[in-house]
Amino acid sequence: MTYIVTVTPEAEEDLLQSFLWYEEQRKGLGHHFMLQIAAAMDLLKRDPHIHPEEYKGSRKHLIRRFPYKIIYIVESERMTVIAVIHSRRNPALIEERLT
Image 1 (tube, rainbow, N blue to C red):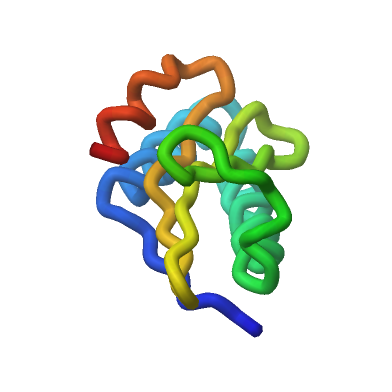
Image 2 (image 1 turned 180 degrees about the vertical axis):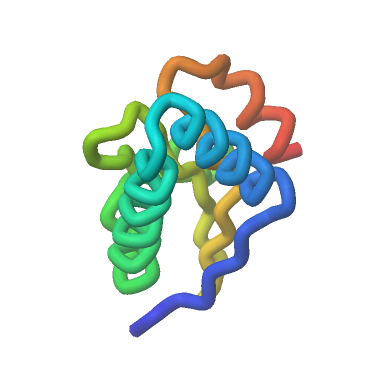
């Protein structure tokens, strides 16, 4: 079963800012970052339950090669991405987005 994926506006902004930062570091690196995100999303669409529930039912998926994680929740047949953030970022951000 493939889940319907929704990305919140905050998570879209996370992606944009990360893409731009990586592009500033080296041309094309932002594109590679987005390819890694797309691959992770494809995996999660097929089986979002591969990661255990954590804070308030959220789950996290670590991105290959980049120190980022996708934070998402699963409800019925829908997966909602609430953040795509650097692994060292303050976890209070997730608390804010889940309330």
